[in-house]
Image (tube, rainbow, N blue to C red; front, side, top):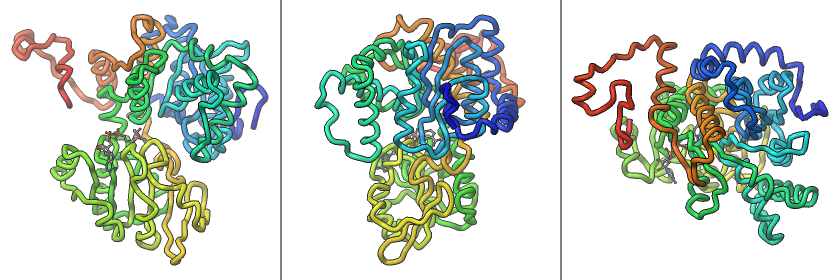
Length: 466
Ligand code: NAI
């Protein structure tokens, strides 16, 4: 429902349910709640107009309300067409916070919403970006280039790109010069995920990054927790909700053994599946082996696999030729950020039957079918509710600290990609210990001196890998 005042959500009447779950999540998000307490009455984000592009879930609602309590003005969209929890979006909309997101929005709407988060009703534009996957940042970067050179965009290479280009062209026609102005107004971006961070480093390398960026993903308390322990809980949850498949005894292969792959492989093993792993990096392959997973090549095992999961952040990992040879009713899904890990475009030529939202059967000419979850988009947010609140609290506490840093001291940074200092990483962890009943030991002065650290931390050198 378009309420006519910048609240594009599925159904506002879901707000009460959303509010109750937000209140439950707050109990599980001690880091965010501690920041609200620490900055009570101080409003460090006053004046910040944050364009937020991150899965509009219950946990994100707690993040949004924390940013607002710290003084920010926000406009929000989801960074995936399937990841919105409509009751969460409704609860945010009910508070009068502009939000543009519903589960199952079209790709056309997705890019319109990406545009909408930058426009304040009084004609002002956003001055901060909070991004997940880099689409909001890319929208401004591409738009500005297209504004300067009408031939820049060229022909779209996919359906998704055609809607992106269309939104950019509409905006240029409607408000010439807007992209340059909007990009210049941004003081900084904080980026949530591996894939978005990869895009930022590529921009910085080319000298095209237009504002300072904080890489939230590579805080230890983000990627070593959310990507890993989050997926350990949310992957199997998603496959079960999608298919109700008995996991015990099934054969599964996880492509990629980075942080997400490690959590995903463990998730499947904990459910009783027999799990193997594919890797291109010998270090991660060795880790997988020593964690007890067989390291295989996909083409050697694919015809004997019940479940294939991609977790690489790379493209074309599961090809249409792989999928043709899979067992009848094998499950294909992706937990990486973008759907291009699986060649879903190429599957469009075959017969699709929708079972329920985010579950499709794809039939090949020989009659064999596969079960495709969330059309290859990230399965834990498409078929389930993403990660649990507790682990998202650690991620989002880093996000809020990054926003405060960029907003209050952004002028001290260059247009490069930065990581939060270790003492803040340790602070995020510390804020989550009490909830778990963990009691930290303290260094004596002699001990601190002996291992060469300050008594109150940081406790590790920058090169330490956890
Ligand atoms: P990572 O870089 O730690 O791991 C990716 C691994 O895939 C690397 O070890 C790499 O060597 C391997 N890889 C690359 N190409 C490969 C190929 N062709 N075959 C086999 N292995 C290959 O990245 P991380 O943090 O694990 O993230 C992976 C993806 O998941 C990213 O797109 C990230 O944005 C996304 N992500 C998704 C989350 C979710 O909740 N669904 C949560 C966090 C991250």
